[in-house]
Image 1: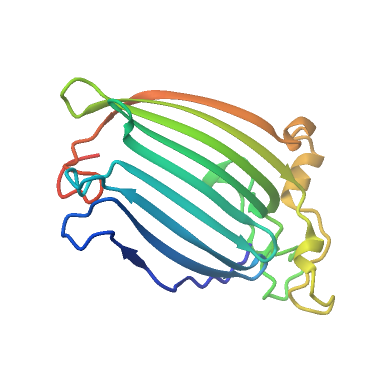
Image 2: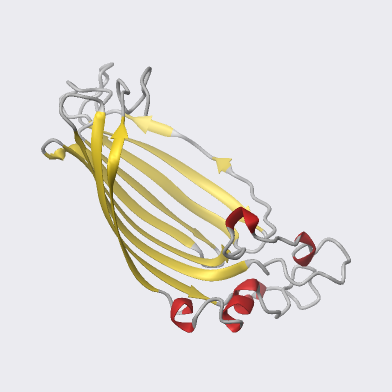
Length: 243
């Protein structure tokens, strides 16, 4: 998908509830962001980080952190996310939870082979007068994602080694690209008007490479476990260590 994106960091500000060098209580930082996509339209929203430093005795570490992100494109795609992490909610365990809903009406789809997938730029380049051109969104599909993720990290003795565990629940809802949504407000003579042509996702479903059951989406539950090494002196702004 051809995109023209402008990122405007319109402002970054942080405030503290005290005038002390060591921060205490709840502090926050916010960042508005605006982007533009040729097909998705304008994106507008904001990011917010909340930190609880308590009495400041562990600063620059924090007791609790809450991250909130909310943004949407004028054509409908959105990001709605809330994340929380803390070393103090569960004694001796670092816990992080992430709740997200991300409807995407032009999700990139290049096939199943990762970097080995064949990508033909002539099929999506509408700036060239080429008989091979199909659609700027030939490699796109609709995909709505709901995600609920939990991660747990605990120390192994007094060392820098940690055990890791996690549980995630995700719902995927794929679908065929809604060309009418992206053509809304455009005249058929507009060079950016998208023609109704089959996308790669439709070829995959039509050929049975993606089964009807898979094309309908569904729920996926994931469980993970492992070990990790973390020797950072602090997480907020580490000055030494390996992670």
